[in-house]
Each structure stands twice: as structure tokens, then as C-alpha cells.
Image (tube, rainbow, N blue to C red):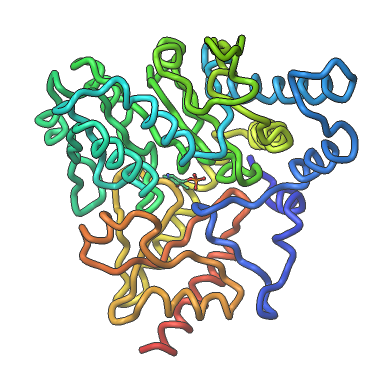
Length: 404
Ligand SMILES: *Cc1c(COP(=O)(O)O)cnc(C)c1O
């Protein structure tokens, strides 16, 4: 079981006040808060062993290299990748997706087909649209239901021998739906297509096992799972990473350079040109250690309790509609109150110390599907409490009474 009271002490930011009120942070789907253990790792790096990696013989460089490569192994173990070199450090999910979209350019022919889900974050739509423009490939969409679930029957009809790549999020950031990615992956493989899963919203809640999933690419951002911003990883199966061309040219990604011919470094360096966010990578490793000490299963069970508690309370409010009522979902609640613009609710909640997100959540096609401009989204982490949910619901009722 989770001892919330002592865990909350790891997050100094949770003690602060906003507009004179104690902060209630319910915007975890946009970014999670950072525990002291991760911040301490960042401070330790800059105070004690800040140096460039892989190139130096001196002690600091070796210490930094060891810690960076240790973080890679920590992340490898967490996602159960077969090899550390299948873990490529990126600046985040968006970067990881763009790397693969760019890599596929040389592998696609006009008329090849790509399949995307109807509930993607813009970062898993736009790079593929750009790729289609460059290659003449065609983008098809798996539709979703009113509850916010993808239609596997429709997916079956989209798949064929021209399908090259399928991409889908593991969990929708707009609705909280947990997608049936194992089915999606298996069906794609049956027609010879590769699959990229956007794990940005899943990584704080579910421990993905990339080998059990047999997924080809899985991308995450550290800042969604208690790590710093600006760093993430791309997991890629070795055979795919070998097949794809390098993403950027520069230092670190080469074996030999001359003006006649340059040969590329092996994995993972082929995809890691230039000096990376060394400190960020090490801190990402510390974040993974931190959440594993709590236990992903403990986190999921507690967050599910919060989700059910908050859902019940919210549904008591007249005129409130929740978008995304899938059978399997995580602690994300998107909603609107009839007759009120989501932005107005968000602004009043902020005055009352409650941080929620309002708008389209970088998923405009989902908003279009429901024919709404946006929603209010409350998303919970393991450091939130039922008392906070009570305060949030009371604040929401106050906001409603002021606005209607
Ligand atoms: C947050 C998020 C992203 C984008 O992550 P960045 O860190 O901004 O690159 C992509 N997809 C989903 C589902 C997300 O929740």
C-alpha cells in the first residue's frame, strides 16, 4: 500500500499556495511533478560530475558516462527491452515519433498505407501527415465510439498488404482510454506492418513490457513520469533500428569520417548525434527508480480508486458530462458543464488553487468528434488525495454557481 502522506513530502511543490489557496495539482496528464530524489540527482550532476560523455579519458567524463549508461540500463529493464542499445535517448515523445517518421521516408512508396487512431495527440498525427506529403503514402484512421473506444472491426477492414505502419497511443491523454494495443500490434504484424505506440500517457500508470507486446517502437517522455522535461526515450527493436537510416548527422553518431566517406556508429549512437541532455537522461533513470520503489501496481490500484471516487462525485453535479467512458481507463477525467465554456471553469478553479487543463489537449480530432471546443480535464497522480478531490468538486460547484 501507498503511504501518501510521506510520499507527498517528496514533492515540495505540493506545499505551495496558489492565489492564496493550497495548490491542488490535477494537471498530471500534461506534466507530472518532480520528487526531491530526482531534483537531488540533477543538483548532484551539476555540482559533482558535469562533463561530456563517451569522449573523455578524464575521471569526470567517465563518471558521467557510467551514470548515463546506467540510466539507459535502468530504463531498458523498466520496459523490459532485450538490449540497452534498443533504448535511444530523445528530447521526448514528439522527438521520438519524428525520428521514426523521418526514418520511414526512404522505406515508403506512393500508395503505401499508414494507419492512425482517431484519438491521437497531435504529435502522433502531424509528423505522419508530413511524411505522407513527402512520400505519397496514404493515412487512414481507426474510428472511435461515443464512449471513446477504438473500433477493432473497422481496424480489420483498414489493414491490408499495403499497410506499412500503424501508430496509436497506449492511453489517450484526452479521454484516458487504455487502448487494446496488443490486439492492434498482433493484427498489424499479421499483414507485415510495423507498429509505433505512443506511451507518453501510459508511462506514469502502466509498465509496458515491450518484448511481451512485441511492439516495434515505443516512445515516452520523462516529464510524464516524475522525470525532468526535455528528455525521453524511443525504444526500437534492433532489426528496425538497424534498418532505418540515421536521423541527424554530427558528433557521436559516426564511426569514421572523411570527406570521401563517413561510416555510422552502431546502436544506440547512430541515433544520438551531438551532446545529449546528459543530466536529463541520468535524472530520468532516477525517476524510473523512484516510481519503481513505490511500485507501478500500487500506483495503478490507488489511482484507480481516485478515478472512481472522482467520477462518482462529479456525476452528482447537474449538467456535467464526462467524455471518455471506456471500460478500461486511467485517472483522466475530461468533462464539460452544460452552458459553460471550459476555459471559464479553468480560470475560476485556478483562483481557488486548483490546477486543471482546459482546451483541446492537443487532440482536436477528438473534440471535433464530440462537436465541442474543448473540455476541462482533471488528471490524477499517486500523490493526489481524496480530500483534494473533495476540495476540487466543491470548487467546481462554486464555479458553476458563479457562471450560470
Ligand atoms: C504528452 C503527450 C505527448 C507529447 O509529449 P511531449 O513530451 O510533449 O513530446 C504525446 N502523446 C501523448 C498521448 C501525450 O500525453
